[in-house]
Amino acid sequence: MLATIGCGRFSRGNRTSTLPAPAKTIASGVRFQEIRVSKFKERPRLWVYAPDDKKKNHPCIVIAAAGSPMTSGMPLGEGDRAEHLPYVAKGYVVVAYEVSGPLVKGADPIPAMTLFAKRDLGIANGKAAIDYALHSLPVDPMRLYAVGHSSAATLALQLSAADSRIRGCVAYAPVTDVPDFIGPDRMALIGNRIPQLATAIRKLSPKANIGALRCPVMLFTAADDQTVPTESVQSYAEALKQKNSDVDLVRVSSGDHYDSMIQEGIPAGIQWLGRARRPKK
Image (cartoon, rainbow, N blue to C red; front, side):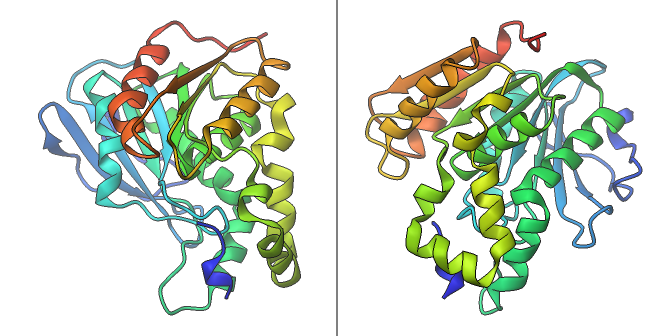
């Protein structure tokens, strides 16, 4: 029952990761490596993309695997690349990271969900991705951004509130009140079976941490989104603006949950990130 809850330097390793395989070209001008994060026993993967050039100070995107029900983790899959490659084409290094604790078909979901809670709903995975980027990749630490769509957008907001190394956040169609999205009945079930997960969901929900999110933020929503209501994103944006003076809300009329992000959201996000972004003092 619990399983249904929720909907050069480029090839050098660091102390938290195993030595990577050699980089390979996967698209014109794009170098790619897969890394295993050895600081965690489950050894989640990082997918690392970099422009095939000699520059040493690229802006950097960290982005979680999308599609999690926000009660368990999520592996990276080939379908995620459409959300990664547009940034590389514009000169960004991209570090995509798995979220520990994915459900396995036919397996008991409780161990996976418990691990997800232990990793702070993926925040620990995001911090490990940042560690790798800053220690091992040709990136500018002053242009380090958390980006994501849907559940990965929620995690981008959570990571940005938890880690001051993030200089800007782009969240496409984020769930901002996670307990409300999961629903009271399912939250009660989680609380009975995995109380530490229920506590983490409530404590780390973006709506509960508005005051901690101090970097510049861009929020994106489509008026016809059938998964994450546009009204919820707008309401969160209004509340966030009361605490953070650098918040932009981009709202489009159509495209639903996914196509709007691919067709209009990512181009808008790249344009927004292209402006000078520095942390608030």
